[in-house]
View 1 (tube, rainbow, N blue to C red):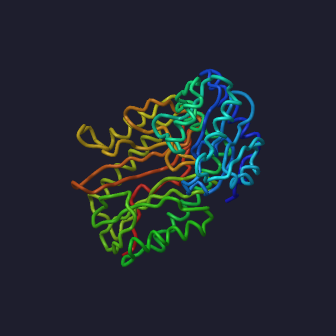
View 2: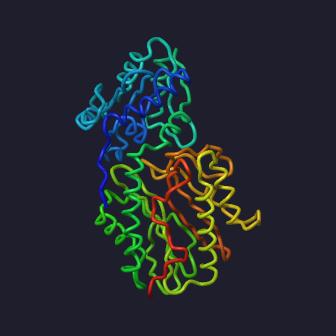
View 3: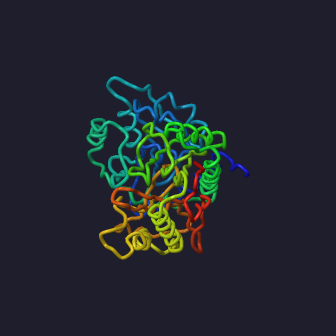
Length: 390
């Protein structure tokens, strides 16, 4: 497998900037204030795990015309200077009384003047990565400015992936597929789920991923009852069903999908539940075309999961989501999300159901929307649950 080129050329960032600035002009936004890692990285290329530390705030300002401006702690100046960003303002952080507030305020004023419209994400799946008290100080200092919700603009800009982004996601999906497909060779009864998680991460790193930022799952006799917990020292035995759900990362881009394994022959109930989620995925894939909505995908998949019984079907709220620089991105495959699918969107299909009262079955794949339909980025799971010799 040929490894994609790491990073992006300047033309990629200029295209992203042009797209969002066109939207800013339509909404009469003078500047965007970005404070969260995915947004800052999307427009700058600033890739670092230093975001794991909540000590320091970081800002990128995107004007309606011209290049972005970074307002960041001095510890990040060198890393930011390696990106395409030319204007970088810094301060020594953490600071006892003014942790970037005056510098951010002054820079915003320089870009907007005495008044203007400052956009920042305020809606679903957004947050502000700076102390609320400091944000109030900025607003007070810029009292003549209007603060505008730019959630939809930013999310739509990032939803549609470039060819270079899709190549990275496809690559990490293929690496994870290699590990999932090798699992029957090293899974065995007597292992604890702690052992399984550790072995999966080791093999994923050996396969070439940069990190295994997300790995959850569950196991139990006749099926699992939970899919988001860490391992709990459960000893695998004949009759168990195991799910592993991973978000591996390569060059800052995620895959996010799962695989199910049966230790010994699966029961009729397990096979039926697996088949229904597999069928629901097939239906979602067939419906995933430009012009359809995320709600359309929900209705198609949930119809199979519920089998005509309105009281059955999914109870987790959504059956998939966007994917990219975050493990989960907008939009959501829910009954209420009418976001229209466009070529270049990368999403997950994630149907799940409850059977035998408390057991769960979840199936997930990663796909990209094309001009004519959809394409799998993860290698499609087998139509029958994988059996591990016990």
